[in-house]
Image 1: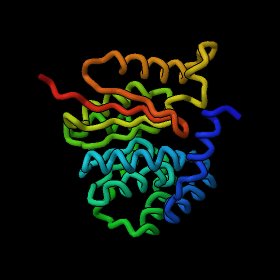
Image 2: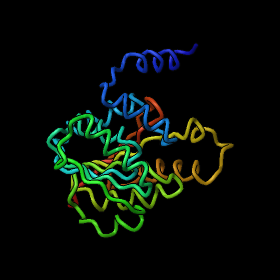
Image 3: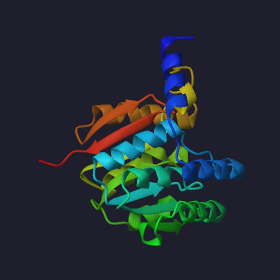
Length: 211
């Protein structure tokens, strides 16, 4: 086992997931709504806390795993979560109720993100999580950066595409989109960008204030 593999295994096994999130994860797996890993969940919780988030947008609700991690880091925030699968939204609502998240802290919107996002207020959110329709990730990140306030953060899990992004032979549409997203944001003066390789990978973009 390589050093990187050993580190990844140690960290994966060291993270303690709250029971309410573990239950949401089990529900997500039953629905076939692949949840983010606990490694990525713990990262987004820390980032939400570090930004002192009060207003969060989540593109892709699943069964509520990522939303619960975000609110674990920012318990006073209001989360707006968008998904076009009614079954996923119903599972997420139940997960939030089980976790005793006040109803005033979560707003669930049923619909296609491409239709909902253009109607949302720009420069109004502290954190935007993009975890839906990987083929549209670049479009959603563009919306996310429009919605985020200056100094706000846009987060994109699964950005390493299971190792395919690092393999130049892999050129399918989703892998190419993630690869382009990483490269373009590294070169952009509009954001500060970094990628965590923990879990399935997490792209982190901080919107830079315009001078």
